[in-house]
Length: 421
Image 1 (cartoon, rainbow, N blue to C red):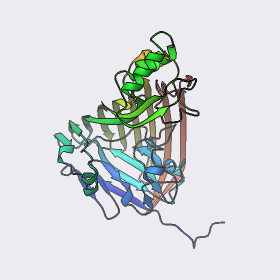
Image 2: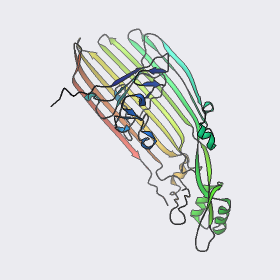
Image 3: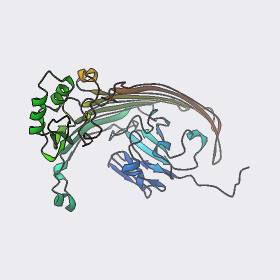
Image 4: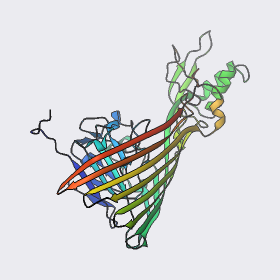
């Protein structure tokens, strides 16, 4: 039985994006560069570093629920990562979106699937006037500053350079009837990463080679070949080999490596109004990204893991006014996600297991060598969605008479069967 005296108000925040400014702001939240800063909305919190990293793309917790409970939509259709939740298409096109709405409670059955927030991003359309933009945004860490604590600890300023550039154009093909819009963006990030490894010192390396000359112990040969020219420099400690053999000195050293990211996105949309009662829209989004050295490969050079990905999303909408009060809307969506986590050097994927050092005398934090056993891996999926809604308007009341939604997902994952030695 429904108790009408206990009702929870629907919280809806709608952000309209002006072409004249990259910042749209309301009293409940704001959007910068077309990305919602949801932490400013009521009931929304940042899960923090201990609880973060569980979803793809924008991550926040609503009303105490996990970030995975949010429902991500693009033009009203599914934009959820089937594997780890979150957005499978991450919307970072600066000129690509017209509106972002966030529903945080008590939404209708139309927005089923999840108990957290419903985030719907509406793509931009053409109008009766031609409009366009060209931009180039440079974000350079040279303009950043260190905190007093960082300066006291001797921390060096990290080097990060991001260059985002692109253009957009839209307008009429036929006034009041046919419109187009398109935008392209390239995002280049140049940064680095460091890792601390524990390897033999120069004297430790020489001792191992004197005890086991090259060719006498294949496992040691492989370990020392991976270590290469790296030598322990600090925090020196000894590892006992036993059997009256001398101890081996190990120490820490730091490895630096580049971590560039290249991302290309474009969006195109066509809107057609053939008659006063009919409206048709087509939209296609393409996103190709390559995250080089996202996983530095067990910290040693030659085992870097790159992550190439391709995301595509298609949308079709047909709305017909059957009468002054009766409207039918049919929508079809298709999304494809393909991401791989693969070693840059394909040969290391079959070069043998990971060497892990454990046990008495070896539990000194010696860094494991080889490609981590979880790589290579990857996942891809195809999502299909069909929706149809027949709605009736009586005065100020809007009622959905008949609604249908069919969703189909075809997914596949693969992962390494390699182990550790």
